[in-house]
Image 1 (tube, helix red, strand yellow):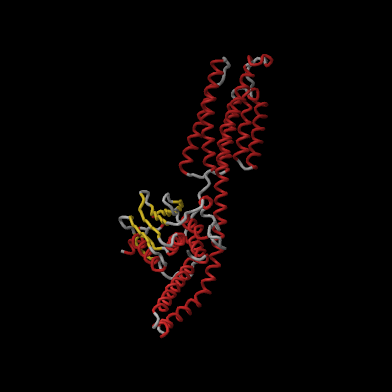
Image 2 (cartoon, helix red, strand yellow):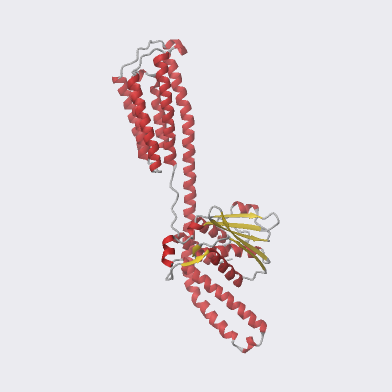
Length: 450
């Protein structure tokens, strides 16, 4: 398994190298969709109410003007739907204007049908409640002031309906019946739409919490990366000195005459080369020594070279490597991606020194899938629940658990995913799924190479 220093630089390098934007908040869009649905219900409800009152109760209404107002509301709704197709984000200002349109439409309809004496005047409360839930405080205050002003204007200027003063007749009174219908409408619409809007807001809060957690994790990786690059500079000189000393020892008589000692010196040289490679990878991942252009390669070549390098520097008894990728694809070789895969293989080797498996496949959704298996004890249940979190390890040593934490973050940065589970026959299985678009060569790069 890579050291914490190597792993930190790997994570920090990819966090800065990959430009990934946080998903845009879609709460405003969903709330606008709810308002549009509410308007369609309002249009149908007003049509039914207007014709019922006009023809059923025999109360004469200016149908021509009231239907014109409804036509304007329909046009506003269609414009809102077209707006959602053009641009996904919906601002507080747009929701504010939409509610003002609804308040204006309701005011006109009430003005044409009795003003403040119309029992449906209490539908203003629905607009105020929606504003309190959807809008910023300043916008809600304006909605309250506008609805109060509209109510007062209706009381001052609208012509009351010629209804008898029969409030004492209870439910037999048309006015009481209208108030009952208005109350039922308010209650039903508030329950339905406030529940939906609250669900949207909860989903937004969950996304924001996840983004904050992700930012904290990436900040942690960056801090480790800064420490890693400093440590890499310090390690370079002693590693070079050890390499020179071991090279001299190989030519000295006490070692050339003893095959066992010579083999141990050769093994030490291999490990020193591995350490130097790790240090170089740290400096590259942290943004230093980037004098070379990205290397163009193919998926099969990249994986084959990665496997050959890993087998040459690790003492694995049996390694089952199966490559089912199929038709090759040109990609950009990424040292950080290589280190990530090495990290998963090292974890498997540590759990199962005698056997490790790697299978490479090309999924239908144009993703590269690498499945690493081992014959070890597998993951504990509590580990599987918190896999990918920092310092979650069963090894019981300081700094443990950073390896898979960084693997999860690197895969997420590339738009991929990591899945870990226990095998029914024993051992563990870790599956890395990476979109090929994240590492595939662009068309213009291919043209330049050709």
